Image (cartoon, rainbow, N blue to C red; front, side, top):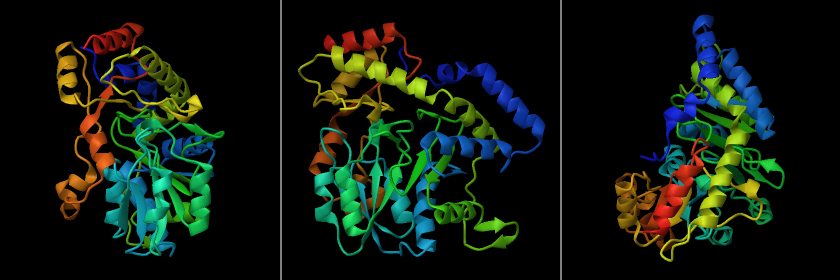
Length: 366
């Protein structure tokens, strides 16, 4: 069986170092808001090129806290609109609606699966205050046109960077392209914890201080609560593991690029649409390698019979979820087509060349 993602094998590659880090945390007697979190925050900020990084409990909270902080700072107010891609994972949208802001769903570009820059402006109203870009599947969504559009309409750019740590646009890493960025360190991410975890990066000092307080019960001084905050803290164990694995992220992302290049070069089937290469290979870290086919379900079953595990990211678009049942009658045809046809192939830094070849050959012979 070729697993979609062999997390055990991925983490065992760093077994000795992880065990040493975990033992150090255990022996320290300090398990929250200690030196491990501080060190990881410093190294994550250095890696992204940002001034500030704040560890939080998970990726959803990272986005929630960015928006909540902007509300506390008076930049946003409840009812304001935030543009977000219609085909994103639901977490992007949950973060908006959880803050009583209004998600404005915009269709993606079918060639990149990212937000279509040319469809944004027609969805901007006087209530629009931010654009949440999602670097979906690991591909950068950013451009000079986006910068100009945000400046023209005085909009904040918030990056959902859950899937794209290490991706680069014009020499700048994701997480340092917009005004603030949310990261997820869910175990299956390119930089994955041994549990849940997340972070926010920004160059805005006031925003960073507000987020740090909000994530700690609204407090920046023990027993003094400035805000009605949350309990959303990255723990010492996860920070220690993440800090170790951060050292290897660029090398592991490069291996993902190598695998993606082989898939793109060697998969040749008339019924399958492959993802496009970005002009600059560094703009994609291939968190997922997503193909499209109208015969998706049959192909998935056939691959499973041959011992190849695949997943669908994602089977139901947000506007068709019961959680947003008032949207269920809306039509986003590009998004719906994507969700009906996409299939994610195995890709990870520990895949062997034999496994890559087997996946390729099996698809070509389908």
